[in-house]
Length: 248
Image 1 (tube, rainbow, N blue to C red):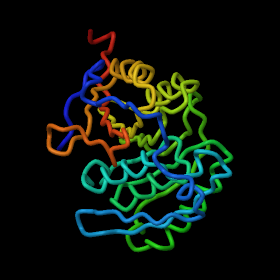
Image 2 (image 1 turned 180 degrees about the vertical axis):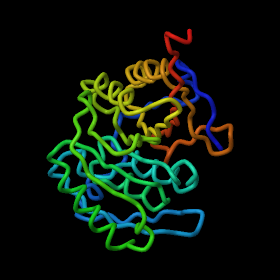
Image 3 (image 1 turned 30 degrees about the vertical axis):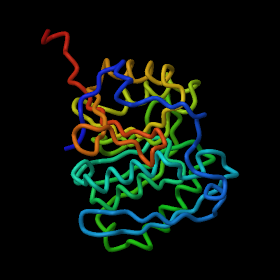
């Protein structure tokens, strides 16, 4: 699998941006009420259509981080198939709903209350348009604020999806705590991250590296994959087993 080990502060492998940080999607695209995404899966091309609402803020739009994460999952469906998946900060729900096409056991979309109607609307649409594929996949939408106790779910989460969750430094600590609360030994996190303030974001990745093994997605086991040359990178985080005091 084309993920290579990444140990902070290995910022050189991510490159450096000399341009001002952007969201990677222009205003015209972000303003569209619907967005159609063509996904190249192992079994052929799939198309999904999602509602957007820029009036809801950045969470109401599918940005490049989400597109990069969808593309990565489509190329490597084994990351999702058969697992219980949760998306943090789902916004439109596009990433989590795309993962549902790869036959996980279940998908839970989570976000703040103001974004849940949009995620629910897209869930209903996706269920209707891909009914046969999703017949055996449980999909739920839950309110969740980072840093608070996670929602009670019938299954533990094997895979956590995070798309563009590192744009606001005010929530870095809460985001990190949520990842620790939601994952168990050997859980995986797929994190699509846009480089904006590298030094600041490296601090978060360094903090996560205390609990997770970090690997960065590459195109050929050598060159880091930079989605659309927009300084968007996909990380695979694997939770390390916690050492029990009794067994130490």
